Image 1 (tube, one colour):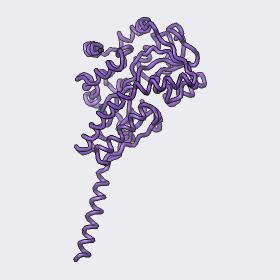
Image 2 (cartoon, rainbow, N blue to C red):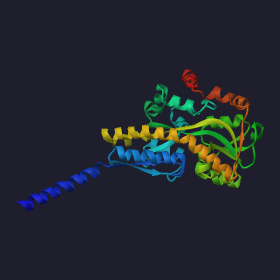
Image 3 (cartoon, rainbow, N blue to C red):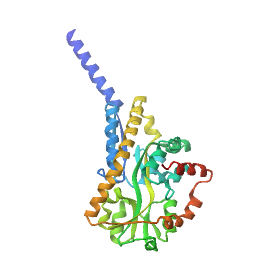
Image 4 (tube, one colour):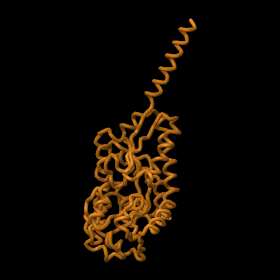
Length: 329
């Protein structure tokens, strides 16, 4: 009898372990930047918090450094239901191509006056509404939390010290009509190059320059081949972490709650780290030979974007855009 009970107890333990194992979910998280970058560190912090809050039943498998592909291709697969990637960090304009027109407001040049302005927006009802725009449009993905990388500025192989130096420069842009319009308005030539190929494109002269936040400029070592950055700060590099509906539906209510708690913590982590990371990166960049040029008068740069404001604020969302502007401290 004792032997039978021992066997039965052993079977229960094994079955329980198997059941627990079956309930464990692994979510693949794509990040185009290196794991050591600001966005990579944010992803790792999020993954650690998910593991903590879920009791180890949800694991986040971070594929950093563009291991799965560039941002546009990853999102295309997620929206298309390919199932290879469950989550990723995106620049907000990436969802414009899938009908998320409201999120386009965040890509308008010279919208946010500083980080405080952006985070005030992110905490607002309008911010939450825009984060959930993928759900509203039924595209199969939705946002979990906002992140930011600091303001984006242009950098070049040769010095560009003012707006006149932009003329005829070949500048790499992401496949985004707003950024294409900004570059064209500044008199330069927008050129499409995959982010994962940008370093080589700069090195070989396929493009003269590109634009990134200082944090990404440093973490991707672009200053090695394009050491001159002009701080026009045309757009805040804000983004969000999105998840597919299919991945979300695999989770229990408790696991979903763990994801949301980790999301709030990760957003705060990013908010608190971003400015310090940028300051340290800039200091290191200068020590490694990069040169920065300040823009003392932003008015000509804003004027060059007049056509972008006219054509790229989605019809029907003019009041929402004004509401965002009004959130400036």
